Structure formats: C-alpha cells, structure tokens
Length: 259
Ligand SMILES: Nc1ncnc2c1ncn2[C@@H]1O[C@H](COP(=O)(O)OP(=O)(O)OP(=O)(O)O)[C@@H](O)[C@H]1O
Ligand SMILES: [Mg+2]
Image 1 (cartoon, helix red, strand yellow):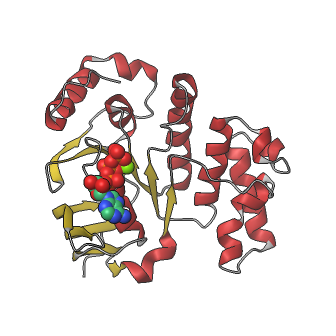
Image 2 (tube, protein in one colour):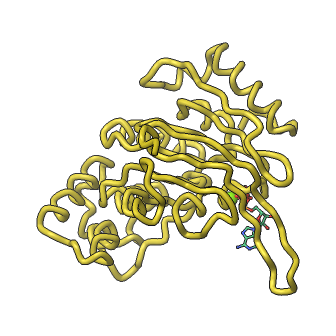
C-alpha cells in the first residue's frame, strides 16, 4: 500500500441518484495524488463537480466507484486527519470565538487544557488573539472566516479541504487572506486542497492547479506552478504568472478574463 501520499484519489466516480430513479454521474475516472505538505488549487466551471470532489474526499459522502486513501489507509480510518472549510464560516452565535474553535474537539470528547492552549495559539496566529472571548457578530466577514480556519486546524489535520473559502469576501480582504493562508499553511505543514473560481488566486497559492471539467467531470489539466515562495503581490504581475493563468483559462474552456 502506498502511503507516500497524503491523499490518493483512485479512479473515483460519483453518481447521484434522484428519488425518481434518475442518475447523474458528476465525476468519473478521477485519479490524482497529493504529496504531504503540497498546496493544490482546484478550478473548474460551476457545476463541474468540485464541491462533490471535496465532500467525497472528506468522507461526507461515499464514492460510487473507486477509492480514496489517506496516507495509504481507507478514508474511514483517516477521517480525523481531514478538516474542511466552507465558503460560509457557520459559527455558532451563542459560543464565543474560542469555544467555536474548540467545537470539533468537544464533539470528539477531547477538549483539554492543551487543546485550549493550541486554540489560543491559532487565534494568535491569525491575528485574533484579543478576540477569543468575543462573539462572531462582533467580527468582520474576514475575521469570521479566520475563526473557521482555526476551527479546522485545531485537530491538527494533515489535509485541509477548502471550498471557495474566500469567495464571499471583498477583494482587499481576500488578498490579505491569501497572504494569511500561505503563512498558516507553512506554519502547520498540512496539505491543502483549495477550490476557487479565481484563476489568479489558484496560481498565486498553488504548487499545482488541477482543472476539473467535462461531463461527467474529470481532470482536464494538472499544472505545476513553478513560482518562487513566499509569493508576494509582485508575482501576480510577472510574465510567468500571466502565462500560467492563460494556460489554465484555456483548459477551463470559457473566456472569463482573469479574476
Ligand atoms: N447532493 C446532491 N444530489 C444530487 N445532485 C447533486 C448533489 N450535489 C451536487 N449535485 C449535482 O452535481 C453537479 C456538481 O455539483 P457541485 O456542487 O459538485 O459543482 P461545483 O463544481 O462545486 O459547482 P460550483 O462552482 O457552482 O460550486 C451539479 O450538477 C449538481 O446539481
Ligand atoms: Mg461548489
């Protein structure tokens, strides 16, 4: 068994069946592997199956065919190594920020003094050390999303799945979150699968950009992004950056402009 990869997606198919018996194959023959510590951006047209892919990898739903391995183990054994961040932070309004971060550990019955310290550390790391006892309604959208990221990281996941995590943020907050996420990723060493509609965000953040397309969805391109790190804004104006963006756009198959 190959446990050289943080995650292996082997020939995965996902078919949804409706109540009236209709079936819709959304993903087919999907095969890819992520090395430990790699940052993989995923782009593709709306409806191409990106969320379906992340939900299947997270164990929220089963593949119809194929298998997903976490460090060479079946996903049900590795489920605690995976955490997910959604577009909306979904914080519980009656819990303060620290207690929201600690929620996954409470569910597992493992909230300890040590985990409490780590939750504080994470909030410090994202610049919210002073907001631990505040409530989500007292935070901006970007701050709330940072709390949601801390909640995902608190259980020390080896794989972080992010589904358009910054899609609801304004452009400036999104830029600063892009810096932040690079820092967090480096500090924690986890692997990341990052779904985005923004080609420039995908290139800026990714070691690789995987393009999902076609019906049913499959991987139409898997492009290594060979830009130096850490990546600052200046990289977004380089010729190499534009070349990557244009290449990815051509695989997505629509004229979108670079957003
Ligand atoms: N639970 C479900 N039951 C039935 N069909 C579903 C379900 N979830 C998604 N689908 C269908 O699967 C297809 C892919 O949906 P998915 O949400 O994975 O796309 P996506 O690439 O994430 O799109 P977007 O970019 O708009 O978020 C769509 O046709 C959608 O209608
Ligand atoms: Mg989606």
